[in-house]
Structures are given as C-alpha cells and as structure tokens.
Image: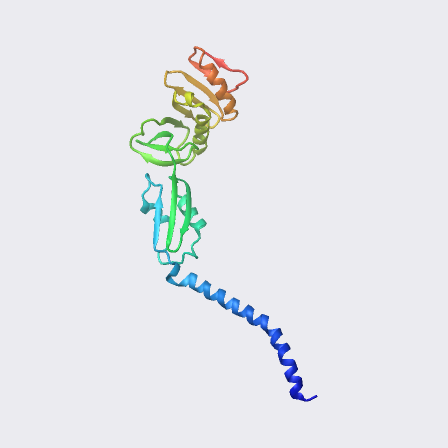
Length: 237
C-alpha cells in the first residue's frame, strides 16, 4: 500500500476526532462574544432608575445610597448589593430591587411606620413597631404612644425601646387604643399608662401574650393599678 493511500485513510479519522473540539471552541467563542455584548455594549445599558414607595424619604436620598451607575450593564448589576445599601437608611423597613429589561432598574421601598415617640432634647425620636428609632420630629405626630426609656435612642436605650414596643404590640387592639404612654427604664421594668388614668405594671416582655389576656380580663375590675408582671399571681389595687 502506498504512503498516499495511508494518509488518505487517516485523514477522515483525524477530522472526526477534531470535530468536537471545533464545535466546543465555536460555542465558547459565541458565549464569550455574547458576554462581551451583555457587559460592554449599549444594548443592555442602564438608562432609567425608578424609586417607588417613598414618602418620608426622597427618591434622591434612595438613589444616592443605591449607587446604580447609569450607562452600566444591566447584566452586571447586583440587586442584592443595592438592596443592602438602601436598607442601611434608618427609615427603610424593606427594599426590593429588580431589573426592568432592557434598560431599567426599579427600587421598591417599604418605609417604617411610626408607632411611638420618645421625647429627646427638645424634639421627638420616632419608633416603629419593633422599637427601631428611625427619624426625628419637632412635634410628636398625633396618635402616637409616648415612650419613656432609660437611655437615649438610637444607642444605649435600644433594648428598652424593643421591650416597650414588644409589649405594646402584644396587646389586643381594644386595649392598645387605651394606652397613653409606655415606660421602659429597662427591658425588665415595662409599665403602661392608660388614657383613663389607670396604670399597668408589666415587668419584662416575657409571657406577653399571657399577660395581655390576663389584663384584658382584669380591666373589667375597678382598680387603679394592675400588676400582671407575674401573670399567675396578679395584683390590683
């Protein structure tokens, strides 16, 4: 057999062996090309950033901390990182960031709602239902419960605020509406002033559901002070 015949017989086999490599190389090249287009071309560049759900905050405040680059790639955007930055704003309770293809980013904010007001240095610090201090006001907004703590918030009084709001949140709605003020000089010494002049000694926020049920029943009894700090042994006077 001639050398030419051997080469002719080997060539188809070699081509068959190299064909998968050629296909893989072509696919890799395509993926790389598409990746370059996604990251560097203007086809998916960020052009608009919208903010929804703000009233206490301005859209500008949210955009300043979000740091979404207009003209940057929508593929390269990290929504989770943007959410973390926006969530650092004290007034933000929840935030969700979504891409709006092909050129938009939407930032949806849920702001904290004021439930309590703490008097502090001639103004009021506003607390949400979890006890987070998130804003200030020159005058306490109407309808808020007055809260007195053992220390300033935000700061050393944070645990006092959390206990106070946990107790307030455990009350049935009908009882909660009777509360004028919550005192929490420490997380273990929570008490309530009712709008009719009566008071409730609550103690810590432990067993709050049980204490709330006991108090709802006790309020039908005539008394000035209701002590539910040990709900198995209540005292009225």
